[in-house]
Amino acid sequence: MTIAHDETFAINRARWDEVVAIHVASPFYRVKEFLAGEDILLPIERAEIGDIAGKSLVHLQCHFGLDTLALARRGATVTGLDFSSNAIAAAREIATRAGIDARFVEGNLYDAPNLIAERFDRAYVSWGAIGWLPDIKGWARVVAEMLKPGGELYLLEGHPFALALDQPDRETGGTGPLRPTFNYFGGGAPLVFEEDTTYTGEATKLANTKTHVFSHGIGEILSALLEAGLSLTYFKEHDSVAWSLWGMMLEGPDRMYRLPEGHPNLPVSFSLKARKV
Image 1: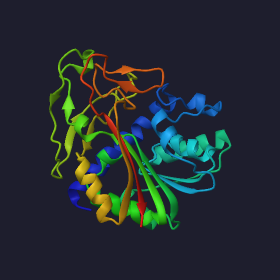
Image 2: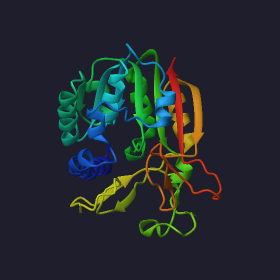
Image 3: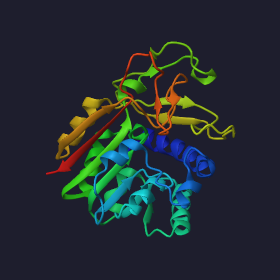
Image 4: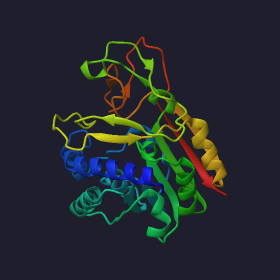
């Protein structure tokens, strides 16, 4: 890990440590509904995750573990990993409240093979995870190492094409046009953002306003997985995403965000499965 990347992780970890309590309490995540027995997974992953009953599963970059626990309810034996100590503490507390047997490990994604001795039938990565990582090839190697032979990765993410666009007035409702704003081919340097609130919509002002985010194009992601020894078995692009990427997006009854009717249809998320040969 380079000094620059150590700085990136320190900046981002401070941010994620701070937002955990806000996210746990936010209606966006639906913790109360989950504890009442509701399935909080969104429709894409519900349709695509497949039968995981009896499977061992590692959820990489699990935040405070709500999806991890939802997967446990489907019968998987789950382990969640996240670099935020506050997130791991919250995940363990929610697991206890829900009466779900789950393991949560604190640590950096790139250290996962040393932190967790077990190897898994499934690896799960979803919604806003890999953009925080500076080295996508290193991520793919970690995924491959965490899987048993024949094990499978499920990845669901915001589409890199959509993430390169922005709406200049998105914070005030978003009536302006979408414009190319960020590099699609990241080149290794982080995009540095300053935002004093979190994406769940709460007005709480944050002390840790800076984040480092990295661009990874579709070709870069696929090439990294193939080079790591995984075989692509499924790939799909979607017209909905889990958060309001631009101000013009509208939330549907399925909790997914889409562009308004009459706007050109664009890919805003993608999913894939890749198997360890």
